[in-house]
Length: 288
Image 1 (cartoon, one colour):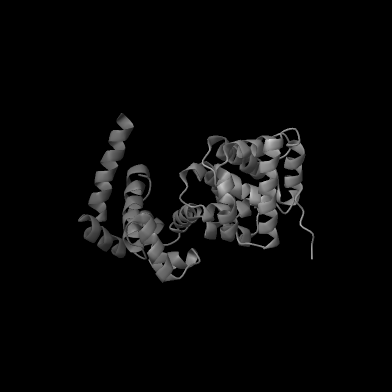
Image 2: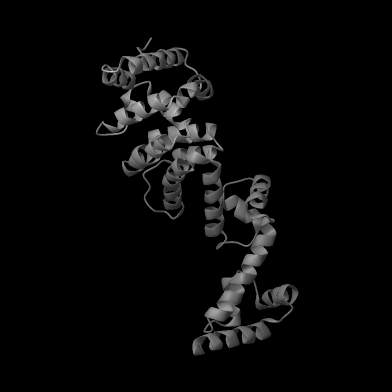
């Protein structure tokens, strides 16, 4: 059986030697952490066992100051007790604790591309979902994975593997929401058909419809209809050099007659009248 490494605990015990009362509290914490690790508890059980120590402000402040005295923040390679200390700090609403996690831990992880640690924070944040004091931490972690997802979608080089980004999205609801909207923004330029958009987003149509309504407050078909109208109006008011046929092609109408039917049904105007009105708007803009 692999021996448990308590490197962070050893650092704290060594640093507390001059304060007997503090040393006693550290020893109590160390005993609980060792017990948790030996029992191989889940994160949920670890939270239950360690959250009580998060209410000891003096102990917590000592832990933070000791970690800050090191040249680098703790990482997974620092010892088996790493997750326990990050859990304990994350459970505390004390300003100094969550500021340390945000500014001295996750910010450095992002800068150094420490994906493994940031994936652990995805699990941690999922477990502690709803704690508003951790929003600053969640924003840093989410932005790291969002930037990489955007690189992947735009065919740019990415530091991460697809399964790593997917794992983060499965853990953080806020990240999943902004990634979904990013995919819709990108892929809606290739289709105005909801079923096709769902396929491009890599989702079943039923799941896509459900999430779309939850995130946008309307059906995908209705949003695509509105988006199509908006792009037609934008083309006509900002690109007067385009012909009606070209505008129809840009907005994926199979023929000018199909485009005319759409304009008559949705805007109660034929394309020529609509184009004329939009051209006047363009001219008025130019004279201002």
